[in-house]
Image 1 (cartoon, protein in one colour):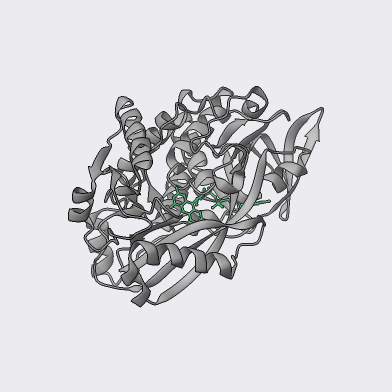
Image 2 (cartoon, protein in one colour):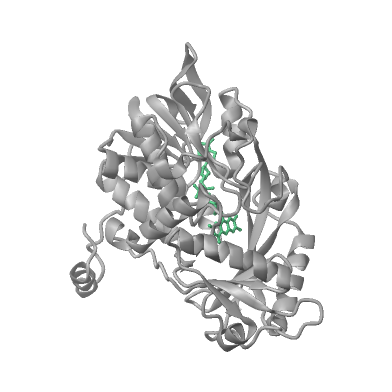
Length: 416
Ligand SMILES: Cc1cc2nc3c(=O)[nH]c(=O)nc-3n(C[C@H](O)[C@H](O)[C@H](O)COP(=O)(O)OP(=O)(O)OC[C@H]3O[C@@H](n4cnc5c(N)ncnc54)[C@H](O)[C@@H]3O)c2cc1C
């Protein structure tokens, strides 16, 4: 069923009884050309682009829970391409361009809203760093504007400008950045992939790999063994666990990141705001809730829930930036597991095991990467060579010393 204003009107006039399933619930086949492990945004996008761009339709996505039950459905929905380093700039701008046409491509309302992101600066040194970043972006054809304090005040008058410790001295604005509805992105890719023949198999956990002569030939799952010519892993926070089943040790740690939503209030925040003197960022959902987040929990974990000290820390950041937030009631809070790489950048590459491919290391920024990650991973799976825009996201870059360390934090995943 193609969605359009006419199909909507027809459904409304017939009491909404004519809707068909958005995707099938198939029984797993004995063998697929490509099996993708992980029904998050990246796995589903990969399957869609494999079918749509590369004509490979004998594809299954295996998801241990329900699609979108991992980070895809837990993130704070920010999309942006304000990166500085070669390798990242082109990749994230490719993603931004795919976001801009996603709704037409998928025939699904993913609620992409280019409401802008502003990264606030609080010192001269920070402003210089943002000027450098903005210049690098503009040289790469990405929009960026450096604002002074007066321009920020005009845009966001409610911020705490005169704070003695963290006075706001300006900000770096990317107007094309914004938010998208995370669940809708999952559903949109699932539906579009399904229409091209992709099997989306939920409640199917991968428990092991079948290997012959150093090559993966299939996978063991809770729904039986499935043969595969190629297997792609896109399991985010579970990457090291999944790779260990194939005998691999990845340069990845798993950490918890929490997100928060307040009760709905009247429209207040026009875009996304990122505090530069602490770890706090905030936007407002279309329903009116303030959506915000901050630091990682300070320990490695595979548990999808967070701790109280980080809740306090994030709320302190919010209070420092916009003290009136203290009168808003917190409605919900949850956690997701991040696959933190050693330089804060992703890995899209073949693994040392033939037939096994890796998509991981998204840290807390992988939602914005969803379309480009799917497209470039599909390219790798289809052609056995990296997509030009993902050619630096190699697994061996840590050994070669070719890190893409956007934050300059070194090998400290908890700081990325
Ligand atoms: C609180 C929070 C806020 C965030 N905010 C942002 C943001 O604002 N902007 C941004 O760009 N990024 C953000 N992120 C990061 C982003 O959500 C992730 O980087 C991205 O979603 C990861 O890719 P994914 O969608 O494929 O992962 P997931 O949705 O986690 O998909 C992986 C899937 O693999 C499945 N799986 C795991 N093991 C197995 C197995 N053995 N067998 C079968 N299936 C398996 C899991 O169940 C899961 O569904 C945030 C993350 C969190 C947690």
